[in-house]
Length: 283
Ligand SMILES: [Zn+2]
Image (cartoon, rainbow, N blue to C red):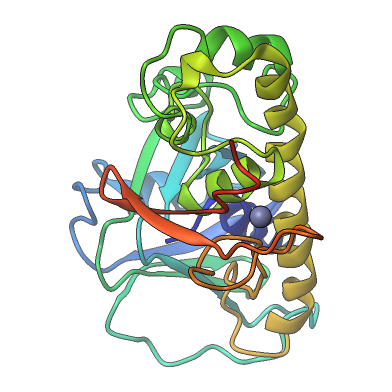
Protein backbone atom coordinates (compact mmCIF):
# COMPACT_ATOMS: atom_id res chain seq x y z
CA UNK A 1 0.00 0.00 0.00
CA UNK A 2 1.52 3.33 -0.98
CA UNK A 3 2.46 5.57 1.95
CA UNK A 4 3.24 9.28 1.91
CA UNK A 5 6.75 8.97 0.36
CA UNK A 6 5.42 6.78 -2.44
CA UNK A 7 2.63 9.24 -3.18
CA UNK A 8 5.09 12.14 -3.12
CA UNK A 9 7.28 10.20 -5.56
CA UNK A 10 4.28 9.72 -7.85
CA UNK A 11 3.59 13.47 -7.62
CA UNK A 12 7.16 14.34 -8.53
CA UNK A 13 7.06 11.93 -11.45
CA UNK A 14 3.75 13.26 -12.77
CA UNK A 15 4.40 16.98 -12.26
CA UNK A 16 6.66 17.50 -15.30
CA UNK A 17 4.19 15.62 -17.51
CA UNK A 18 0.98 17.26 -16.25
CA UNK A 19 1.70 20.73 -14.89
CA UNK A 20 1.06 23.43 -17.47
CA UNK A 21 -0.35 20.84 -19.91
CA UNK A 22 -3.89 20.49 -21.20
CA UNK A 23 -5.82 17.24 -20.82
CA UNK A 24 -6.86 16.85 -24.44
CA UNK A 25 -8.93 13.73 -23.85
CA UNK A 26 -9.80 11.72 -20.76
CA UNK A 27 -10.93 8.10 -20.99
CA UNK A 28 -13.05 6.89 -18.11
CA UNK A 29 -13.51 3.17 -18.57
CA UNK A 30 -15.87 2.36 -15.71
CA UNK A 31 -18.41 4.18 -13.51
CA UNK A 32 -16.55 3.94 -10.22
CA UNK A 33 -13.54 2.95 -8.16
CA UNK A 34 -14.11 2.76 -4.43
CA UNK A 35 -16.92 5.28 -4.93
CA UNK A 36 -18.72 6.42 -8.10
CA UNK A 37 -16.78 8.93 -10.16
CA UNK A 38 -18.13 12.49 -9.98
CA UNK A 39 -20.82 13.51 -12.48
CA UNK A 40 -19.56 14.07 -16.03
CA UNK A 41 -15.96 13.60 -14.90
CA UNK A 42 -14.50 13.18 -18.39
CA UNK A 43 -16.32 16.28 -19.69
CA UNK A 44 -15.23 18.40 -16.73
CA UNK A 45 -11.59 17.41 -17.25
CA UNK A 46 -11.40 17.57 -21.04
CA UNK A 47 -9.67 20.69 -22.35
CA UNK A 48 -8.60 21.80 -18.88
CA UNK A 49 -5.07 22.85 -18.13
CA UNK A 50 -3.38 21.50 -15.00
CA UNK A 51 -2.06 24.53 -13.12
CA UNK A 52 -0.42 22.68 -10.27
CA UNK A 53 -0.11 19.12 -8.95
CA UNK A 54 -0.10 19.11 -5.14
CA UNK A 55 -0.17 16.48 -2.43
CA UNK A 56 -2.18 16.52 0.81
CA UNK A 57 -1.50 13.46 2.96
CA UNK A 58 -1.80 10.54 0.54
CA UNK A 59 -4.04 12.43 -1.91
CA UNK A 60 -2.85 13.92 -5.19
CA UNK A 61 -4.58 17.21 -6.03
CA UNK A 62 -4.50 18.61 -9.55
CA UNK A 63 -5.68 22.24 -9.64
CA UNK A 64 -7.27 22.99 -13.01
CA UNK A 65 -7.86 26.23 -14.91
CA UNK A 66 -11.62 25.64 -14.57
CA UNK A 67 -11.44 26.44 -10.85
CA UNK A 68 -11.90 22.79 -9.98
CA UNK A 69 -9.43 20.39 -8.39
CA UNK A 70 -9.12 16.72 -9.25
CA UNK A 71 -8.43 14.51 -6.24
CA UNK A 72 -6.73 11.16 -6.84
CA UNK A 73 -6.17 8.50 -4.19
CA UNK A 74 -4.17 5.41 -5.08
CA UNK A 75 -5.88 3.27 -2.43
CA UNK A 76 -4.28 -0.14 -1.86
CA UNK A 77 -3.12 -1.04 -5.34
CA UNK A 78 -3.53 2.04 -7.55
CA UNK A 79 -0.70 2.73 -9.99
CA UNK A 80 0.13 5.64 -12.24
CA UNK A 81 2.00 4.98 -15.45
CA UNK A 82 3.42 7.56 -17.85
CA UNK A 83 4.09 6.79 -21.49
CA UNK A 84 4.86 8.56 -24.72
CA UNK A 85 6.44 11.70 -23.32
CA UNK A 86 7.66 13.62 -26.38
CA UNK A 87 10.51 15.27 -24.48
CA UNK A 88 12.13 11.87 -24.10
CA UNK A 89 11.95 11.72 -20.35
CA UNK A 90 9.99 8.47 -20.68
CA UNK A 91 11.46 6.21 -23.30
CA UNK A 92 8.76 3.57 -23.71
CA UNK A 93 5.85 3.83 -26.13
CA UNK A 94 2.18 3.77 -25.29
CA UNK A 95 1.40 0.27 -24.07
CA UNK A 96 -1.69 -1.68 -25.13
CA UNK A 97 -4.57 -1.01 -22.82
CA UNK A 98 -4.64 -3.34 -19.85
CA UNK A 99 -7.61 -4.77 -18.03
CA UNK A 100 -7.46 -2.48 -15.01
CA UNK A 101 -6.63 0.79 -16.81
CA UNK A 102 -9.64 2.65 -15.43
CA UNK A 103 -8.78 6.24 -16.32
CA UNK A 104 -6.39 7.48 -19.01
CA UNK A 105 -5.37 11.13 -19.31
CA UNK A 106 -4.20 12.08 -22.81
CA UNK A 107 -2.10 15.22 -22.47
CA UNK A 108 -1.78 17.64 -25.38
CA UNK A 109 1.99 17.07 -25.35
CA UNK A 110 1.38 13.48 -26.47
CA UNK A 111 2.13 12.03 -23.04
CA UNK A 112 -0.36 9.64 -21.53
CA UNK A 113 -1.00 9.12 -17.83
CA UNK A 114 -2.79 5.89 -16.92
CA UNK A 115 -4.44 5.04 -13.62
CA UNK A 116 -4.54 1.26 -13.12
CA UNK A 117 -6.06 -0.30 -10.02
CA UNK A 118 -6.90 -4.03 -9.89
CA UNK A 119 -8.52 -3.88 -6.44
CA UNK A 120 -10.32 -0.56 -6.94
CA UNK A 121 -9.81 0.85 -3.47
CA UNK A 122 -8.58 4.01 -5.14
CA UNK A 123 -10.72 7.09 -5.61
CA UNK A 124 -11.15 10.18 -7.77
CA UNK A 125 -13.27 13.22 -7.09
CA UNK A 126 -13.71 16.78 -8.36
CA UNK A 127 -14.28 19.80 -6.14
CA UNK A 128 -14.00 23.56 -6.27
CA UNK A 129 -10.37 24.46 -5.66
CA UNK A 130 -11.36 27.19 -3.21
CA UNK A 131 -13.28 24.64 -1.12
CA UNK A 132 -10.75 21.78 -1.36
CA UNK A 133 -9.78 21.97 2.32
CA UNK A 134 -13.40 21.32 3.24
CA UNK A 135 -13.73 18.16 1.13
CA UNK A 136 -14.92 15.28 3.33
CA UNK A 137 -11.67 13.34 2.84
CA UNK A 138 -9.42 16.34 3.52
CA UNK A 139 -11.30 18.23 6.25
CA UNK A 140 -10.57 15.48 8.80
CA UNK A 141 -6.81 15.53 8.31
CA UNK A 142 -4.31 16.82 10.84
CA UNK A 143 -1.18 18.75 9.83
CA UNK A 144 1.29 17.48 7.23
CA UNK A 145 4.25 15.78 8.93
CA UNK A 146 6.69 17.74 6.73
CA UNK A 147 4.88 21.05 7.18
CA UNK A 148 5.41 23.85 9.70
CA UNK A 149 2.18 23.18 11.59
CA UNK A 150 3.55 19.83 12.70
CA UNK A 151 6.06 20.72 15.39
CA UNK A 152 7.16 19.77 18.90
CA UNK A 153 4.62 21.93 20.76
CA UNK A 154 1.80 20.69 18.55
CA UNK A 155 2.61 17.00 19.02
CA UNK A 156 3.07 17.32 22.80
CA UNK A 157 -0.37 18.95 23.05
CA UNK A 158 -1.98 16.45 20.66
CA UNK A 159 -0.77 13.41 22.62
CA UNK A 160 -1.39 14.84 26.11
CA UNK A 161 -3.78 12.68 28.14
CA UNK A 162 -4.16 10.07 25.40
CA UNK A 163 -4.70 6.55 26.72
CA UNK A 164 -4.02 4.84 23.40
CA UNK A 165 -0.63 3.34 22.50
CA UNK A 166 1.60 5.96 20.88
CA UNK A 167 1.70 3.90 17.69
CA UNK A 168 -2.10 4.09 17.31
CA UNK A 169 -2.05 7.81 18.08
CA UNK A 170 0.49 8.45 15.31
CA UNK A 171 -1.61 6.44 12.86
CA UNK A 172 -4.60 8.65 13.67
CA UNK A 173 -4.87 10.83 10.54
CA UNK A 174 -6.50 13.60 12.56
CA UNK A 175 -3.32 13.96 14.67
CA UNK A 176 -0.86 13.84 11.80
CA UNK A 177 -1.79 13.29 8.16
CA UNK A 178 -0.42 10.58 5.93
CA UNK A 179 1.66 8.56 8.36
CA UNK A 180 1.26 4.81 7.84
CA UNK A 181 2.40 1.65 9.55
CA UNK A 182 5.89 1.45 8.08
CA UNK A 183 7.09 4.96 8.85
CA UNK A 184 5.50 5.05 12.31
CA UNK A 185 7.46 1.89 13.24
CA UNK A 186 10.65 3.42 11.86
CA UNK A 187 10.18 6.79 13.59
CA UNK A 188 9.45 5.16 16.97
CA UNK A 189 12.60 3.05 16.67
CA UNK A 190 14.66 6.10 15.78
CA UNK A 191 13.37 8.02 18.79
CA UNK A 192 13.73 5.07 21.22
CA UNK A 193 10.04 5.03 22.16
CA UNK A 194 8.17 1.74 22.62
CA UNK A 195 5.18 1.50 20.28
CA UNK A 196 3.25 -0.10 23.16
CA UNK A 197 3.63 2.86 25.53
CA UNK A 198 0.55 4.97 26.16
CA UNK A 199 0.83 8.27 24.29
CA UNK A 200 -0.15 10.35 27.33
CA UNK A 201 2.55 8.79 29.50
CA UNK A 202 5.56 9.80 27.45
CA UNK A 203 7.64 12.70 28.76
CA UNK A 204 7.44 15.87 26.65
CA UNK A 205 11.13 15.88 25.58
CA UNK A 206 10.75 12.34 24.23
CA UNK A 207 7.65 13.31 22.26
CA UNK A 208 9.52 16.33 20.94
CA UNK A 209 12.22 13.97 19.64
CA UNK A 210 9.60 12.16 17.58
CA UNK A 211 9.07 15.19 15.34
CA UNK A 212 12.54 15.21 13.75
CA UNK A 213 12.51 11.39 13.67
CA UNK A 214 9.25 11.35 11.68
CA UNK A 215 10.51 14.02 9.30
CA UNK A 216 13.80 12.22 8.82
CA UNK A 217 12.35 8.79 7.97
CA UNK A 218 9.93 10.38 5.50
CA UNK A 219 12.57 12.57 3.88
CA UNK A 220 14.96 9.65 3.46
CA UNK A 221 12.23 7.59 1.83
CA UNK A 222 11.29 10.49 -0.47
CA UNK A 223 14.97 10.79 -1.43
CA UNK A 224 15.04 7.06 -2.22
CA UNK A 225 11.89 7.52 -4.30
CA UNK A 226 13.58 10.40 -6.11
CA UNK A 227 16.44 8.13 -7.16
CA UNK A 228 13.91 5.56 -8.32
CA UNK A 229 12.46 8.17 -10.71
CA UNK A 230 15.66 7.96 -12.73
CA UNK A 231 15.19 4.21 -13.17
CA UNK A 232 11.51 4.03 -14.04
CA UNK A 233 12.01 6.29 -17.03
CA UNK A 234 14.05 3.48 -18.52
CA UNK A 235 11.66 0.79 -17.33
CA UNK A 236 7.89 0.55 -17.64
CA UNK A 237 6.91 4.09 -16.65
CA UNK A 238 5.26 3.06 -13.41
CA UNK A 239 5.68 5.63 -10.68
CA UNK A 240 6.14 5.46 -6.98
CA UNK A 241 7.25 1.97 -6.03
CA UNK A 242 10.85 1.70 -4.97
CA UNK A 243 13.21 -0.37 -2.90
CA UNK A 244 13.96 1.08 0.47
CA UNK A 245 15.63 -0.48 3.47
CA UNK A 246 14.10 -0.23 6.92
CA UNK A 247 15.62 -0.51 10.40
CA UNK A 248 12.75 -2.44 11.96
CA UNK A 249 9.86 -2.81 9.50
CA UNK A 250 9.73 -6.35 8.11
CA UNK A 251 12.82 -7.41 10.12
CA UNK A 252 11.29 -9.74 12.75
CA UNK A 253 13.97 -11.98 14.27
CA UNK A 254 16.83 -10.08 12.65
CA UNK A 255 19.49 -8.37 14.78
CA UNK A 256 18.82 -4.83 16.00
CA UNK A 257 21.00 -2.32 14.15
CA UNK A 258 21.78 -0.15 17.19
CA UNK A 259 25.53 -0.47 17.84
CA UNK A 260 26.06 -2.60 20.97
CA UNK A 261 22.47 -3.91 21.11
CA UNK A 262 22.32 -7.73 21.07
CA UNK A 263 18.54 -8.14 20.80
CA UNK A 264 16.55 -9.02 17.73
CA UNK A 265 13.59 -7.14 16.26
CA UNK A 266 10.22 -8.28 17.60
CA UNK A 267 6.85 -8.24 15.92
CA UNK A 268 3.56 -7.67 17.73
CA UNK A 269 0.09 -7.18 16.33
CA UNK A 270 -1.52 -3.91 17.42
CA UNK A 271 -5.02 -3.04 16.18
CA UNK A 272 -4.71 -5.74 13.55
CA UNK A 273 -1.42 -4.45 12.13
CA UNK A 274 2.14 -5.63 12.61
CA UNK A 275 4.37 -3.53 14.81
CA UNK A 276 8.13 -4.05 14.58
CA UNK A 277 10.41 -2.81 17.36
CA UNK A 278 13.44 -3.52 19.53
CA UNK A 279 12.39 -4.27 23.11
CA UNK A 280 15.79 -3.13 24.44
CA UNK A 281 16.23 0.14 22.53
CA UNK A 282 12.61 1.27 22.69
CA UNK A 283 11.17 2.10 26.11
ZN1 LIG B 1 18.07 -2.69 20.00
